[in-house]
Image (tube, rainbow, N blue to C red):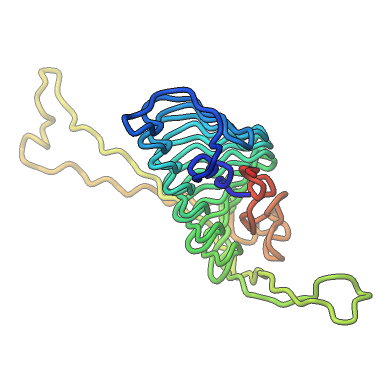
Length: 299
């Protein structure tokens, strides 16, 4: 459900607009601070301007939801917090009654999304964190789904690459904490969905990981330059005083992690299909959680 609906009753012309107690202007409009009880049982307490909610206020829905924040000309606009009937919550920016701008959504299952919104959907840069597994997707979102450059971070490995419509797509790589990385690509594969008894099973497209080679991650040690030696009287050592340059330092030795074959053996089936990880795996939410689908609950 949307965040709008019952709030509009207060603006409709009619014989009964509900009860109101508060300030009015010379024209008799609600203007200033006031408290209103709408015909459907919702209540509002806050600022008015020329008969419309304008400024800071609190709107309480009879189903238990509530909005605490800013209004402009009767619509949620600015900074505000919306608490939904199921306990989920959004804190952030609103534009024209829509979640729009930067905000944080706390889902009823403990997951969180922090980032940019547009027209009520996750859109732009953001991070979705799964409470159950600790995994998180960090990257670009389009119309509520991961789309574009992103990274899926798990407990002991992470995937970096491109996403499309909520799924990994195209070239990318897995980076493992044991010190190696695997390059490859996700390709779209069609497979039948549904039971074997169906005469014409529906075909769905899923991403399939095509593994490439595993390579070790090498680290180069950095050695700090030594200070010039000084004599007891604080003078520079003879060879430096005579204009000679100190002996050049050798570069730090390259320090390699375990060989690729050894790392692959430790990882086990790393070259097989994509690792699965609880809810969502390497796929960020393909759709809005159920908690958000019922948001607002307004009549």
